[in-house]
Length: 314
Image (cartoon, rainbow, N blue to C red; front, side, top):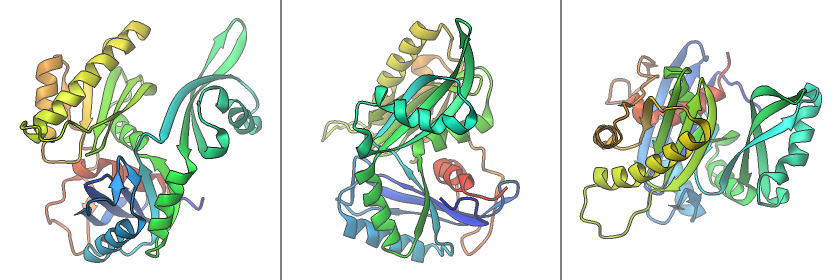
């Protein structure tokens, strides 16, 4: 879809804010040429999906103008319960036949009519069983209506959506920069959705999407609420993974979007006994433009940067 640009914007959002980064140059020499976040008006996005196209469009246009974004091409990250991730195994076939085979057999793994979904896939490896060769595949399905709602909002303000990616997988790519060996978990969260992924030697073997909603009028501080939700889900996810794979988790990478990241990381480490680290793989990137040196914290924008890098020229 027209990927590989010399300059591109990575954009993602939740019900509370829009976050975006513009990167110029190439994957080998990336430069952050603009960045920003803006509080999102109530009712524009709910549970990671567009609820009011007019309000969302206005907020996107406002952010682009306030923060001096120049490019018009966008890689959009989406993260909600309309994104379905499944692990599948298919017989190995010639490369030019893989896509057709995956599309034909995806319905056996995803309990939604294929006509309602956009399907993508990632081949993670091969294996042999009873003398036959198989490929291991991660299937990613996204409901077309949800995607089209986002595209409508973004393109209505003069931007061009060149690619749509799973924010969960964007977070995964940023974590893999830090470590591609051993068994570790990558936990991402925003104001609506949390993602728990477990990798072994660089291969994604487990993924779960959870709601970050909590009961209203809770007296606990934000960090405590986030920690409570994540702790329960991490514990059950790790226990399930251990029962299936017999591999100990030796580290957790935590990727959040608020100032509570360090507090949440500390609480999770104390309760699980597993080392928790906040990855910051893009901290050395050069920042130019009118907002250079104005409080940019790369770890808050890991997903946006990862999204933009996907669309950059080599």
